[in-house]
Amino acid sequence: MSLEKIYGVHAVEALLRHHPKRVKQVWLAEGRSEPRVQALVELANQNKVAIGQAERREMDVWVEGVHQGVVADVSPSQVWGEAMLDELLDRTEGAPLLLVLDGVTDPHNLGACLRSADAAGALAVIVPKDKSATLTPVVRKVACGAAEVIPLVAVTNLARTLEKLQQRGLWVVGTAGEAEVSIYDQDLTGPTILIMGAEGKGMRRLTREHCDYLVHLPMAGSVSSLNVSVATGVCLFEARRQRGVKAKTKK
Image 1: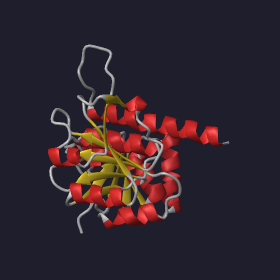
Image 2: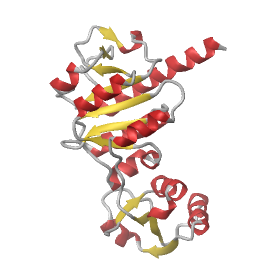
Image 3: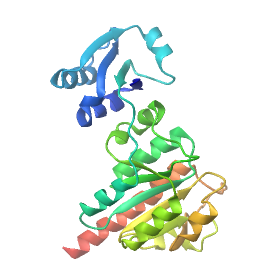
């Protein structure tokens, strides 16, 4: 089994905390000894993970991106299958929030969406298996540890998956620039699936047909749309805000 290299302090630390058995070796750039790195060394030692040193120039060859002097050799990334959704929903209390990314192919956008989804309390992120970004070292680096916490679920047939989730009582809310209802006027406090489409193209036709509601983000400036990861963060935290308000009113 070939290993992959994960890089960046946050990404490697998250792996050591949540999936230490996947980490085979941690490499540190020569001379790195600040508190953040020392905490990472302690985690590695606690989990009996070997630690080595390497020159920064050598690490620059290993990975594409800002590695911060921290690289780990790990077992391959795990993307969950559709069956994982039923398990997650079965053991979830309250109204679940799921994020669907329909055709988002940029790994930086996927990483940023995973980070926002985790921060907003989403249960999982769902993507189609084809024509979609998946877990890579770049995604893990951008996600700043969220990729090790929130499940990324790849499904063969997104429309069929949405139908199954609707049968379980979840409402599908899709984002579209021409929608009449604002995200701020849509009730997102119930069991909700939020769908974000690819930049430029938006949601695919079949995905759109499975939406119970369509919403848009009001734009006040001269630009017509936001980067998909930014728009995802706005929508997820609107759901988070509404759920917080609802929880307070119940007390």
